[in-house]
Image (cartoon, rainbow over all chains, first blue to last red; front, top):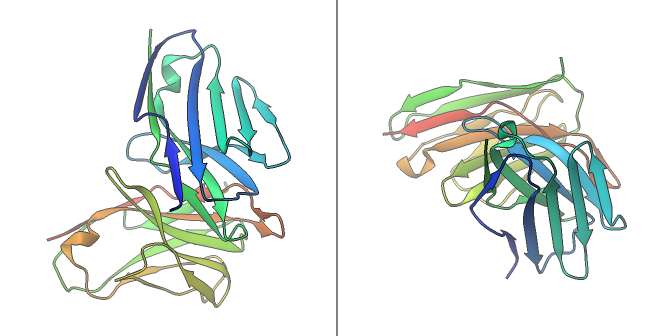
Length: 112
Length: 115
């Protein structure tokens, strides 16, 4: 069956450390994968998109990798801050991009 | 300001009473979509639309209807709501090309309670 899984429901780290979130998928062949941030009671906000032919993408303190052999994406936040505390969702394209399939999210808590 | 708006933001209704949740975007996006988000189940797609008069089912379409008569609007209709449709609903829009979707912009959400 098709699955998209984010490694853990919750991740707690200390301020200044690097947070690493994992997204694994099975029985999909996505052309791209996206990461979103969601704060409680609010809509997801787009962060980064990485295509299947890209190994790595960066934006400020964020870095995403995409390994189509392992069927895995890693999302890193370096020098994490309490303001980074939120739920992070990965999403992959399905059916030629007509749909986005979302993981259930990882809730990151950064303590000062 | 580029945005997706939804109305109402909060709604309490009773079983069987028809309701419509409106969604509008001001970015001239071709693609629009409705999701529901439930604890433990994540975001699931209800319906999507590739352009005006083109709609298709997502993963959980039962009990919902949509229409796309204008590019900017994509209302979600619950003809006969039931308690299992109590959820947080999000509308989203994006551009769509041969390379698929780009950034999805989400609305603020509509929290629906069906009694």
